[in-house]
Image (cartoon, rainbow, N blue to C red; front, top):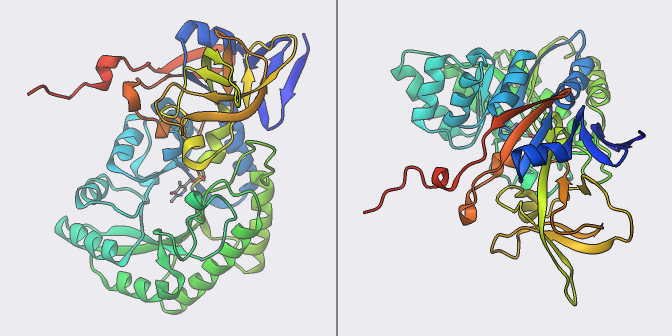
Amino acid sequence: MTATNLPGQPHIAYQGNTLCMEGVALPDVAAQFGTPVFAYSKASMLSALAAYQRGFAGRKVQICYAMKANANLAVLQIFAKAGCGFDIVSAGELARVLAAGGQPEKIIFSGVGKTRAEMKQALELGIGCFNVESEAELEVLNDVAVSLQKKAPVSLRVNPNVDPKTHPYISTGLKGNKFGVAHERALQIYQRAAALPGLAVVGIDCHIGSQITEATPYLDAMDRVLDLVTDIEAAGIPIHHIDFGGGLGINYNGDTPPAADQLWQQLFAKLDARGFGDRQFMIEPGRSLVGNAGVCLSEVVFMKPGEQKNFCIIDAAMNDLPRPAMYQAFHQILPVTPREGQSTVVDVVGPVCESGDWIGRDRELNVQAGDTLAVLSAGAYCMSMSSNYNTRGRAAEVLIDGTHVHLIRERETAADTFKGEHLV
Ligand SMILES: *Cc1c(COP(=O)(O)O)cnc(C)c1O
């Protein structure tokens, strides 16, 4: 049998006429677990992590997986076992890390709206760092820490005001964004933080956006952050770690982001040149660790030819795969068992009652009702953003490891979706 590899998808390939992930035929996964179902390749996640680790060889770097990209417990377990910490944004994520066996001291807590209750919980557990995003948050965190007679380890998320050249909804480091504190005010806020009794300044962080496909925004942000570190330390406040956030893009549709190891070679060249090479660093990658490790398998329910458009209606929808509706995002869509013959141009859509419920537009496909399609690059920001809209139970998730298929999340039943609701 001949294998046909797909660009950017080292662990997904056609073996003959069957789309496979690692050593497993994807049609068998659909048959066994039903559709829609997400399948993730463990080898793909670990090789994405290994690319970062190669780039960091001989350096002091803690990789904190940004778990909002894909928060399944088994996925977290893989990264925890591989030595990763976690970047969290809620008490719910904190509970997940603990349930998956992650270590509290390797947790960093990001987000613009941490509540007192969340701060208290994280402080009592002894997390590694709070990435503080505003002056108001700094004061409240100090309050909470003082009341617990603890010192909260803090880093300020600074907004370097660089354009990551990505979709506006996923650019986060520009002046008009809600994230972080302004570069111009950062030194003053550090001085305030250093004076507060409940806080211990440990670091500085930035995160400029997501699906970044060029090195330049990172290099620019790094310069801006290093300038600040210099100023803050000159003011007598030592910065123990520098956290450059996440954001590295993946290949969805011919995108060519730098490989993690090559990007970090470039970034370390700058760090070395500026005399920061031997510092403690942190990074918070999400999408680039899991995005291309996942596919969503979905069955074609009906073909609906029309005068202006032909629709291919599948059993996955915007509640399972929200990225096209949210950001006009592109996912490759492939038949798991291609047919011979002519393809037609179709819009692949879900059954949800919204015109925004499309998964792919103007795709050349040769499919019939009952066929199974694979929506690629579905490992990040799909299941973790899914909802029960239209009272659709969330899909099942499986982890593929060589020839083994582990069910890592059961399909939600209708009863699951209204659990906790009460008749009056
Ligand atoms: C979302 C997020 C990340 C991860 O972003 P990716 O683009 O998935 O790598 C990292 N840090 C923070 C603060 C985030 O909000």
